Length: 267
Image (cartoon, rainbow, N blue to C red; front, side, top):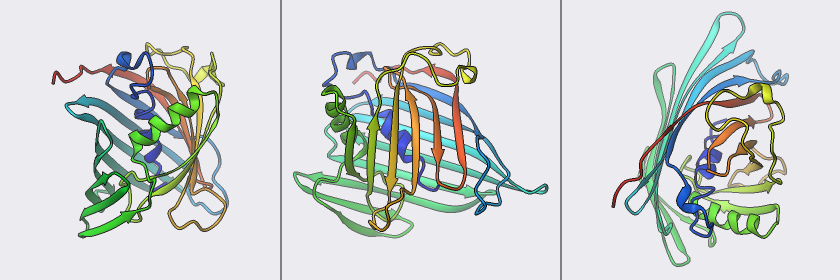
């Protein structure tokens, strides 16, 4: 699940669009989740269990929004082998989606195995990525490619019209391979989670949510199966109650434990 963080960036932008009448009510926040495996892996996997935590932060700053995610995951393989994966992702996207900055790192047992940094700019219909690390590289993006927040604004327009499907090409800065194809399905608002026993005692437990499903495909366009899928239970204030990520080999769930509300920067 190398690129599974992408969907969290998408969700963070879900209700930031000024097209919504209650957009001013969106509260920057820091959310903490408990992560666990919820199904037996396929025969292709040697993983016996997955446990960990994830912190997700959304902040409003002058000129745009920043997001940050830090995950600590332990993968258990057999009785004695344990692999610790620490993953971090920091982005900035301007309010008009003309500038997108990204920084991704991944450590395995304290060894840095991935460090991607750069920025992407758009001028009218021209979009270009400038990678700064692990190597200097320029990459042209196809016409119509969206940045995460921009993608969400388009998705919101579809949702407001009562439609449920939204395909798009999106660049999120999570790899050196460029953009991904994201096919999204938006369900009708629900009042109660499918498994209420997973709800904790945080202040948003029991509130109505939208079920949202993202299917993520690579930039190569080969094959019909998604690289991974994720579903979320999304609150009207943009907070994720819980999520499930399925890469076809193992399936993990993150459940919201607690929320810290953050102030907006006074610009």
